[in-house]
Image 1 (cartoon, rainbow, N blue to C red):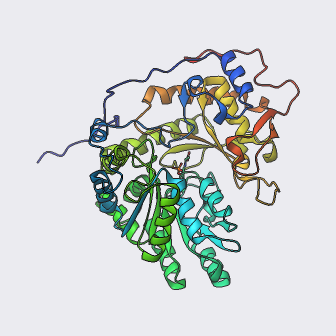
Image 2: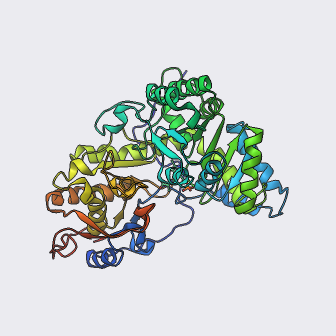
Image 3: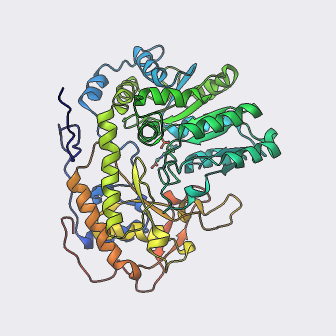
Length: 478
Ligand code: F0G
């Protein structure tokens, strides 16, 4: 018998079918774009961004099969066969009784928490994503993060840093069970560094929830990546297909919210799925009010088709091996050049520890924002601050440093190649050389909620470095 010997290089398991040109920009162009954007990268025009690592949400490339499926989209208002195919693909992995399509993940969150939230209530999670937190808080409820201690230590190398602190959940429930309508687990834990949650942790959280009679919901945006980590890191799952692991994860919970813009490989979409008939009824009424009729929700029939096909591709082992390896490739290179990064690397992004990289910048002068602006200015790489700008402002108007100040380099799915990543590595290296000169940031205007999207900033030093510095670097986009 011949045993197939694997090659070292894990290739992109696809070839490029149609291309989207990138506009290369000069440093001077980027300096003025940054200033016009109020140093908020969400305010940049995408044409001014050569390498866009702002998010992995809805930015992936669809496959030929997805584009073909789009042609089968049936746009009947009620009972479209596209909904049947969507529901079959969803329930194949997540066998919940009720599936409510929504226009994206946050719409599912809004429906779920409008139905279950309210003043005085508490919703625990390993770490809430910002829209989840905002949807809970907007009902008057409190969103509580219960990550394990290692989840807040960027340099702690543990396989499942996304886990929830089960003892803390148990304490919370023994003291205030009546105030908790449900418990959530975010897989992978995006705001905590894209770290996975183990099957053992999901089971333990589910058991505690069961004891207190509380439903457990998964925020399942990146569940395929999480399942791949379970397969490759948790004993006993080596030979279990990812689709089976996902079914096991789903069976430990009572429902889910989902953004189809992440692992399901679509550009738009989401859903809420659950078993509880009475709660589903309330949610469906809310869905009809603002999303649409239950068989299309906030989506066109063609979107439902793209999601159904994307879900099948998302659990393909060759795809997931490449996906996780390409993130690791970027992370390993940054670690090698001495950039402080969250380890081990998550499934969808590499997170730079901006607080450690820019120790001269106080957390309330936003080291993550300063670093993200420098990466754009120097090399046209757009990233996302996940730190004090995103989480530091509280509903009572007070501001405190977030647990970590991270900058996320999120990798869109099936979109960039290895040479793009090599270029990103060079850009980060150059910014690392300038680190001690980077100024902090000051907020000059901000809304009361979700300020990271629209706040305007200015650098804290009078000379407005680095934008005003005359230095001009070489580089493909510079
Ligand atoms: N939950 C998690 C863990 C997320 O990462 C996101 C979105 C959502 C819920 C909301 O889903 O965007 O479809 O409404 N995350 C994106 C990001 C925006 O950049 O990480 P959505």
